[in-house]
Length: 454
Image 1 (cartoon, one colour):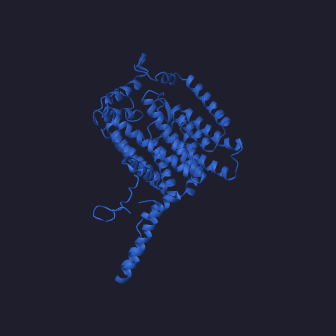
Image 2 (cartoon, one colour; image 1 turned 180 degrees about the vertical axis):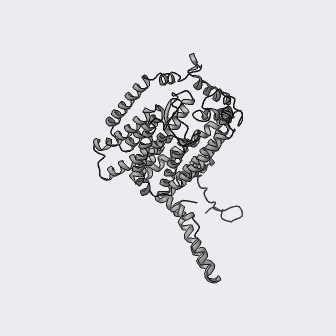
Image 3 (cartoon, rainbow, N blue to C red; image 1 turned 90 degrees about the vertical axis):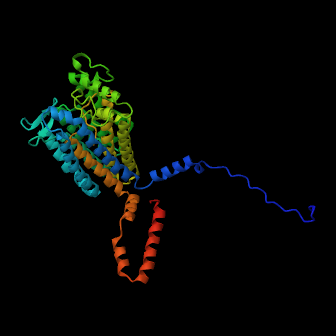
């Protein structure tokens, strides 16, 4: 054995360990992505997205309604806050409806399907009775409730079709009848066409498009074969083509897609000035309340074209924020529909998500000049109590379905304060209270680790 100069054996040095390759999760970006993915996959993610997204859209909509409607109210010799106060009242009532819908059990929602459909059909037929129905902007789809309050029954027809169609398809799926095309179409498609006919009697093409989108969403969720889906779509497109071709007003709206000039007789005035409003906003807008187009240049600034005023006053940042909130709401609805085992919940959640996202796409597309002006409001955002009330009830449905998920139910139960255990600990002696409290906290900690919720 070799020795050193001092006569002592050399010191044996430990061999260096090879450096371990760093995984992508070791860097900050990888850790952030991992944490974001875990947070995104938590049981309460959909619940918080639906609740928070809908409330943010509604609150921001109230602010923009107040800003966009002041000039219109003053031009009508009304107080500047007239439209805002009516919208705020509708939002309060809608909030109560959303809370009630979010606390109702699924069986009660299904029990409301047929009464709601019958009530919607009755009111939509009542619109066509002379002396009862009210005509606004060429469409007779309103019923006067006295004073300045009016109701549009076709908005409630959307909610009725979602609930009734979901209940119908769920019952047929339980009986394994959806494999036959007759049971998939009848009576869902005839009932939807009946609602469409009542809407088109008043001339409201925009609402008819939304109702058609809900019908196709339900058929797609039910697993309609491609041939059947294409057949129903072809019939709907043919009817829509005839209705558009025979109406000069609808043909003029179709010709305003991508227009940059008002054209002869100012037929594209609204579409062009909507683009002007968006273009003048820039990245961060001209400031809240500083819109120029709302001073009589842009018609329906607080209803159908409120997105254009949002772009002018809040800029690209404001419009992208609104779109992001709608995207989050749509994703949460799809997630609720995809993770449930209850067929009614799947069809109802999918129908509500189709309704809100399709209406938002049609409204924003019309403002951007990519689609014809359909005259539909931006859900939860535009002025209009008749559109806000059923939409907030529908959001309450999504909240109820998100809470009904077993994992979300367990996570919510963990977060509720356990007053009984606290009172039992207070009543007990000091020596006995310590171990009980420790055991309770240990059980809670183990439950938190098992569910992944914080």
